[in-house]
Length: 152
Image: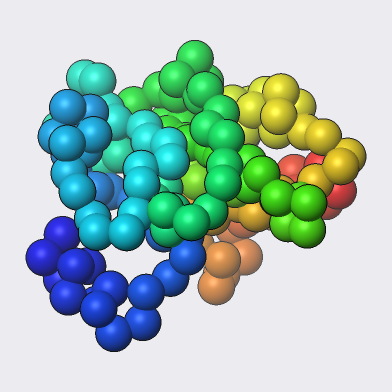
């Protein structure tokens, strides 16, 4: 977190999606970054480390989406926000899957969350780390590619 705070003084982003933030929910909600608010987070319940969060500049209006009922430690960790602007019609979904997490279960939960929050009035920005090697041909890469094409 110290490295992050140092970088913010040079080129502060409007929105930060942070994977593997390694904090418990209580620690994360009390963590303060000047000029930013915690928009949404997913903290592991049964394992240590991991987790995902979205911080937004305090000038940005947003709504958090409740994602806890979709999350499963190491398999599908996600948090999401919707930007409340007339001009920016976006939902940002940040997700993580550990290398040990079941890939098929990840795809199932990913599909469920997309169907739950999908709205034709805005676009999704999906970011994260799902631990799929996209540089080589492999079954996970093909399944993920097929999945994203079907969702379009």
